[in-house]
Length: 82
Length: 199
Picture 1 (tube, rainbow over the protein chains, first blue to last red):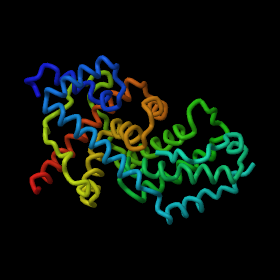
Picture 2: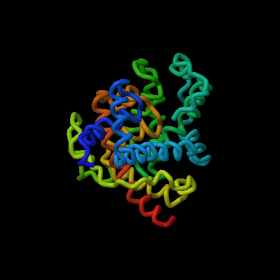
Picture 3: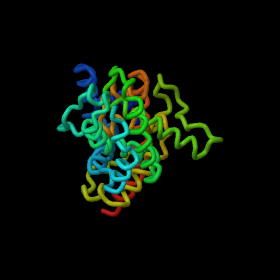
Picture 4: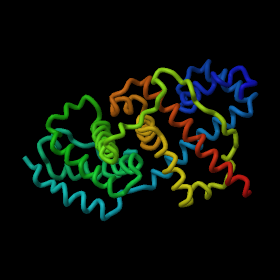
C-alpha cells in the first residue's frame, strides 16, 4: 500500500466513501485512485463485504419464541395501565 | 434494524399506559433490542436478561420520555447501557475495554490483509462456522467500537441516530466506525483468505 501516495489518505476516508458521504469532487478523486490501485480496491471491496455479511446475518435473526413468551410474562404489561 | 413497515407508535397512548400500544411497542422492538444485546454479549441468557431489563426500564420511565430523540434511539440507548452493565458485572475488577486511540484521529489503523475474498461463493458466508467467526471477531472489538458498529452497520441506524443513542458527537461516531470496520475487515480477511485457498 505504501507505494501509492494516496493510499493512507484513502484509508482515512474509506468509511465515508463506502457510505457515499463524500463530496462529488473527493469521491471522483478516490474513484480515480481506486482505478489505479489494486490494493485499495481490494480493501474497499472487502470492507463493503464485511459490513454486508454482518447486516445480512442479522436481518434473519428474530427473538426465539420462548424468549418472547418469557419477556411478555415478565413485563406483565397490564401493570403499567394508568 | 427496525421493520420499516411497522405502524408508527402513538407516544401519547404509550405514555398513558395503553396496553395495546405498549404491546405493539414491545413486539416491534424486541427483535432489534435482542440482537443488539446478543452482539454485545455473545451469550443468549445474558441477552435475554438485557431484553427484559430494557423494556422494564422503558415502561417505567416512558412518561418522562420527552421525545428529543426517536423512541427507537432511546430504546437502543437503554439496551446498550444495560449490556455494558452486564459486561462490567462479569469482571468488575477490569474496566470496560476501550480503544486506546483518540476519537479525533485515525492513527494506527492497520491494513495488512490484502486478499480479495469477495469472490467466494455466497454459501461460504452463511455457514455455522462463519457465524461463529463473525461473532468472535465482533467480541474482539473494544466495547466503544463494538457499540458503534452494532448500531450503525448491523442495525442500520444513521450516523446521527447512532450519535444520539450513544451520546457521542457525529465525528466520534465516524472515527470509531472506521476503526471498527477496519479491524473487522482484517479479522475476516484472515479467515476468508484461508478459505480461499481451498478453492
